Length: 143
Image (cartoon, rainbow, N blue to C red; front, side):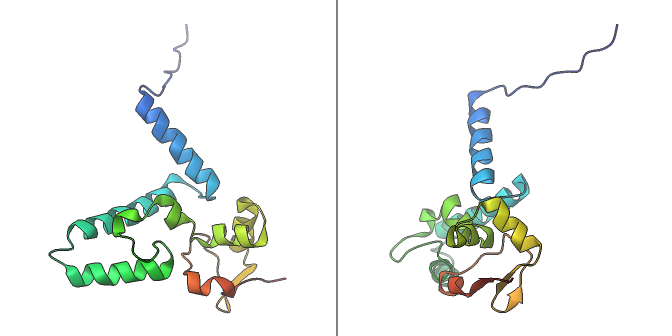
């Protein structure tokens, strides 16, 4: 008699909720893998850590806060704890292109990786490039 393959299942409700949340973000922002999602979470973790160390490092906190406002992760009069996964991934090149050109996220990712998109007169091939709000108009499709 053959040995049956062991079946793995999600044991708790919490892991199911986390799994569903991760799948939602992967689909919404056109991320390739959970590694890209991890990069966004790492940035959030770094920013939040800097918020709690703002007493010891006030200059670093002020510079990082100003940088996040320029990038579009935060609005004026917000603190570092207000940065979310949505605000981070909504600044990626693939998402901005899909919203501005009214195309699907998968199609915008394909256009970027095939070199059909220019930004500041350079061809970009990385869909996860973070684009500042002020430079959003510089994204162009190459025919």
